[in-house]
Image 1: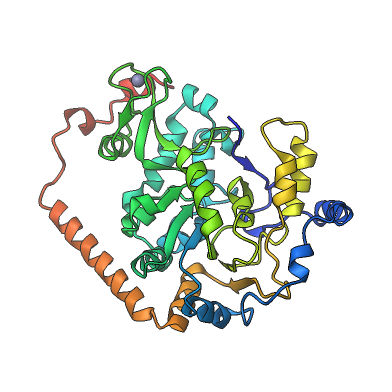
Image 2 (image 1 turned 30 degrees about the horizontal axis):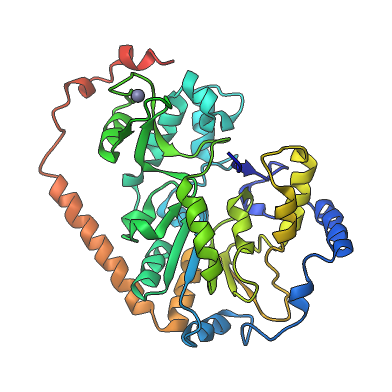
Length: 388
Ligand SMILES: [Zn+2]
């Protein structure tokens, strides 16, 4: 089925570190120079932004040339909501689950083979991360604002926290590249019955292992596990969106997970790219490809040649002023951009509205205490441990 989800964080560095080792970059850099791939387009041509800065981006947006903005987001847009970057080694949540279930490798939590044998660590983590426990951040509201301004073509997120939905970005404008809790399916391919958000929520919150009502197999939220294909929507949208993009905003991602990271190369060569992140990342995908070649060189699932030909990565030194890095927390970054554009009031209005709506929903739910759920009043160990 083509593409698989691969972490190229080969050295087990924390996700924030970004980039690939210098030697990999060096090897491929040499190769690219010999092949005359990459770098050539950057050396000639007119300036894309009049200045490589937030003001350059502001004037570009105001020029009217910018109509189709794509946002690519990672865990960094949700950290202000209190959601840990749970896939990173060292994050408390991940370590707790790993220790509690004595897992030799934390990645097992997201491996389908292991899940079939022991789904409990995944559901234990899911309970902690469940979307309803968190509120969207200013970065999510900024995406909503882009939509309200008629500028948002699509929001691609690696996050599974569902905060884009909660921020009321229209579902059709969101691509949840690594899946979602909002739908779930029976893992038995011949059955594949779909279950609703409410259904899975009840199971997860009451520590009950979700079992298919038709065939008694496990039911799994549509979160993409290691080795699983990304959702079809990701490929279909990426295919049609990126050629039309005239501003790419990359927020809070270390750009190390493929194929998501390679999307930065799919926009037209004169499309400006704004990175809002704690550090510069993704500025040379060639390094990542060198690492891929070394590790997965013979794997037929990865089209190395096409990655190689298409990968130039971000270049913050490009004389045409194409790529801008706004370093710091995502919320600070979007606020600076909103202020530069005179949009800060709009941004605050969206936030207040969302918070108000949330409060109303919370109040509406309060008068009804625990729903009548005889099975869930006691955390029935017999039924739940049968899957262990
Ligand atoms: Zn089933």
